[in-house]
Each structure stands twice: as C-alpha cells, then as structure tokens.
Image 1: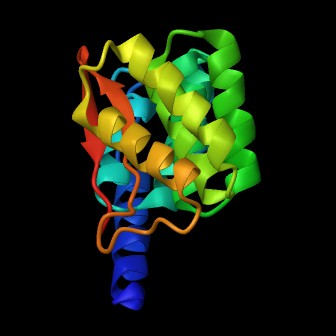
Image 2 (image 1 turned 180 degrees about the vertical axis):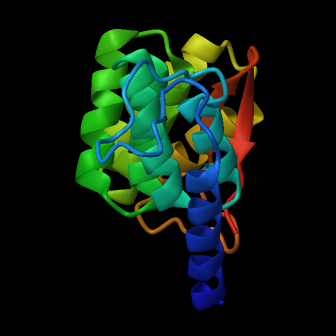
Length: 188
C-alpha cells in the first residue's frame, strides 16, 4: 500500500512539473532556469491543505503544509497551533508543547491552542497543569464546545483519582478553528 501511495505521489509530482507555470518566461533553447516573476494564483493556502491532511490522518504531510502556511502567513496563532497539533499527532510532545505555548503567547484567547496544549500535557502525564489549561480553554470558550467540556471532565477525573481510566473513553480530542466554529479532528 505504501509503495502504491509513493508511486502515485511521484507520478503526480512528475505531471505537475510538466505543467506551465504561467509566470516564468521559458526559452526552450536556454540552458538556464526560467526567469521572471512566479505567479501564486493557482496555489492553495497551506493551512487549508494541512487541515484536510490532518482530517485524513496524513500528519507528516499536514506538518509540511502547515510549514508552507507559515511561510505564506508568518508565525500567526493559527499556524503555530496547527504545527503544534500536527507535532502532537506525530508523537513529538516536546515540540508540540513548545509550538502551542508560542501560539498562546501570540493570542491568549485562542481556545484551540489552550485545548490542544491540555491534550499534550495529559499525554506527558502532567495532569494538574493539564486540568488548569483545560479550565482556561473551557472558560474562554464559555462552555460552548462539547469536546473541551469532555476533555476537562476527563482531566479532572484523572486528577482527583490518579488510577481513573474509564474503558474506551480516554481519548482526548484536538480542536481547530475553522469558519468561526470548532471542528473536531477525529482519532481512529
């Protein structure tokens, strides 16, 4: 399956390379690379691509798309939070924590970054701090998101009873912002 996927990616890349860019002047007799301005008209926002890849479970590709989004938008709260979420899904907890803390420094009211930081802290076993972070996310969200409410409930239960481990109910949910609402990134 991985070989087929890799072959499709290579074939798509080859076909894309054959397409005219529309922005660079090409002299077929020149031994040099094309020159002139390159048009970004056809490019899709790296954040949008990254969100779609995260939803599809392609976390490494999503991280690359988010990094491209960072080059397009700068280190905004959306970009930092998205990179942190992708790092979390890849198991890079230290990097995820750093990115999410930077996102919160950019905008202390950005609820998805607070929630996702809480998820990272729970994964690291920092239950007390995670509970505080989830409380902050819940307060900033005014209790509107079911996922944040459930994350807070699980964190508080775990904090009060360190041996608490409800069967089939210990998955914390990541959230991201999209068109004014919180969208869950499902876990398989």
